[in-house]
View 1 (cartoon, helix red, strand yellow):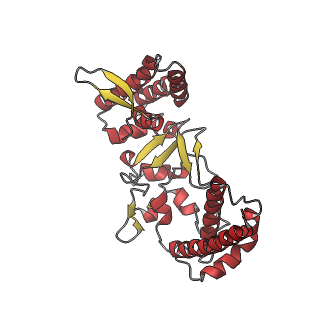
View 2 (view 1 turned 45 degrees about the horizontal axis):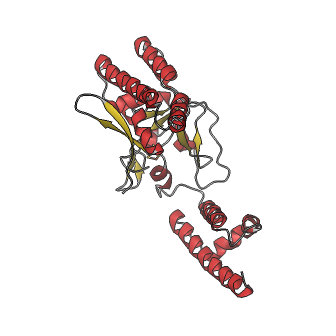
View 3 (view 1 turned 135 degrees about the vertical axis):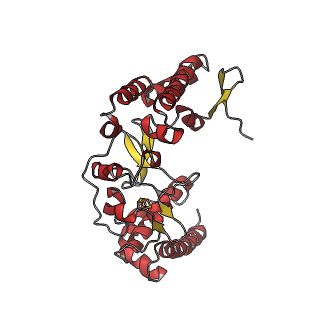
Length: 294
Ligand code: SF4
């Protein structure tokens, strides 16, 4: 890159930086000028950009993402209280902790409001702000259909419909504060909710043993390695998962909304992550096929 190009690139970066600072201020409703915000983050900015290679576009995007997050965090810190911007509630619904059992017992949060993210699934961690493969299961509040907004968030006045009884994670997380700490309590699991209902708990355990996300991933790898010849293995997992759902629905009179808490989300829902879909024929048989990209 010539000196002139480098100069233009720097000029461009300075303009983008001002715009990013403006956007962070707008998002957090902080009261400050973009240049003041940039001054606050200068030492950290220097650190982030010290090894940047301007010609590497992938690295460039990664660095800008880090800068954006930094600006938002520092802008938040200038207003150390909740301003009901709704950012937390619109981005992620909470994960339940043991303390939240009282909310279930009082029927404030009901089974149909929840779903299980099972061990081995990808889940979003609110605190580390990343998607991780879960080492143990979590019970989460559902999001509104087609979005990541918590079902209890009311858009018309940016409020929480269960604010006085909101889950522990919502109380602990002070998005504006660097001092905000991770909750120390254990996550709630299905064992805590269902173990006492012996007949249902046995079904959950059997499903958990036969239908793990570990086995699912192995079956998918084998499907690829055998170029589709081991498809019966994957179809077997899908059939078993579906059978358990139907059985729970009939035996315990539960609808699909509650079943998502009892045995997690349908395995069929995860096929699209691997570019596959399940076709159901009228004679009751199923077929797996790659999703056609139009
Ligand atoms: S429970 Fe209430 S405070 Fe917590 S994320 Fe949902 S809407 Fe926000």
